[in-house]
Length: 289
Image 1 (spheres, helix red, strand yellow):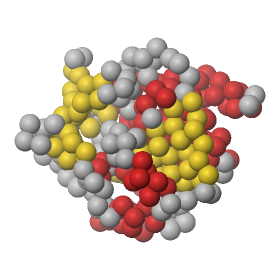
Image 2 (image 1 turned 90 degrees about the vertical axis):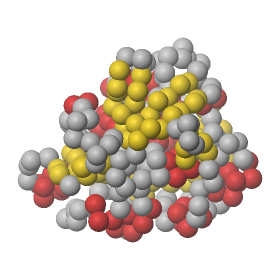
Image 3 (image 1 turned 180 degrees about the horizontal axis):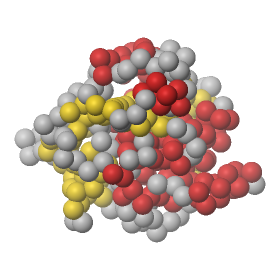
Image 4 (image 1 turned 45 degrees about the vertical axis):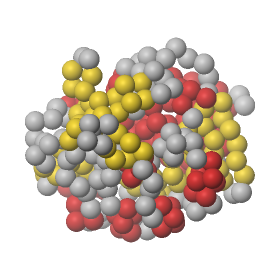
């Protein structure tokens, strides 16, 4: 494991949003781009004013310059987790070629000041859910897509059942999934929503539904010109977690996250990270509702 060459105790005092999972090497027509939940969610949380730390694993040759502003602990790996994503804004085909080293409790440092938000963001079943046990007083957030993925012999990503999802959801406060993660299984969605205080299901360009306190509300997304939705779900999740942390209002957090995620698909890859103007515009729209 290696981390930034600065006083760790000083930095750890500042971290209030910690995200754990693999950065990814995303293969695109324009070359290899940095991706993964820790990248998109981490940069979104930073744009929203949080001091962000990530714990990840990748090969030493992966270009991490896009996240140079984030505090990092990196578990060295022979390979970086490598994806190829093909999407038209509604349907996505994914290929998974390599997976970096798994992350577990031994990879988590001791924090003198516990981060206010802990976000587990697996992309390839690489994160141990029991990491949450180290953060009993944090807002515990999940984007569990990576626990519902496998690949076949052709490296094509396939959806699988999330083993022990009830136990995992019981350990967390908020989870965000996409309707595609569960292949549109409404019975499973209903079951999951009863196992955790706040449960959110994104539905691509349609918007998202938020389950809370035995109620559910659908939030429509604005119409936008689609360019690329890579990372949009991770942007949504971080925006939701951060807004909920400040307001304790899941409905408002959902509206805020839908706006930022929808606007993000008008740009490619990491250019979709919310700008200061977009964040202010989203807040202004919420005030007018």
